[in-house]
Image 1: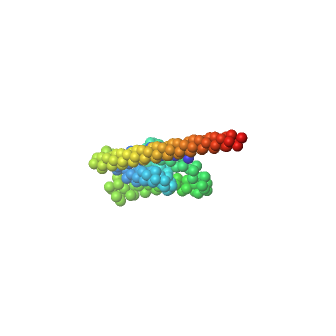
Image 2 (image 1 turned 90 degrees about the vertical axis):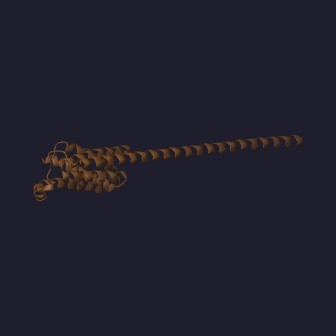
Image 3 (image 1 turned 90 degrees about the horizontal axis):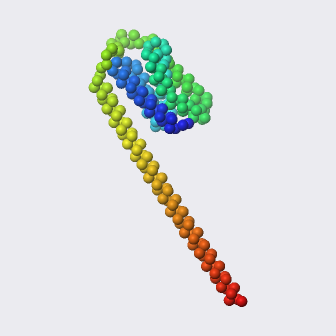
Length: 216
């Protein structure tokens, strides 16, 4: 698995998920808010090496294109689904190396869960909205303070994550420098030992030659 490509796909997924979340909150699309949150939670867990995070983001992503295909969402939902499925697509080969059968089952279950979620919302959306009028979508953007707070929180998290990555890189570079210094010290010590051994050998040779001359 290409680790760098996998990490990049998670970053792109988080950006797309955050944008979808903000848009959904602004227009009171609460079911899409839930799907966007699941995308972000799955991506965050996947960044920490959790397999269930990859599966969760994939399942949530599958709901977006299905919602478009059954006529309850705009066409750009298909792009959200494509971005959301990328981490799972990249990691699936690594999963299959351990257990192909389990990987197939996980793929079917995750995709089915997302698709069934979209179908269920189409079936019961109007009855839920009728029972809870607060779930009714709005035609104009709202919740400016909430959106600002979310954007600010995301910026703070991204800044801290960037600093942490930079500190980790600095520590790694320092460790490499220490290892290089140790290698140089070891090489110098080995060279000194070799030089001492050569001098000792030359001394032994001189002594033996002197003994031969005296014996003559």
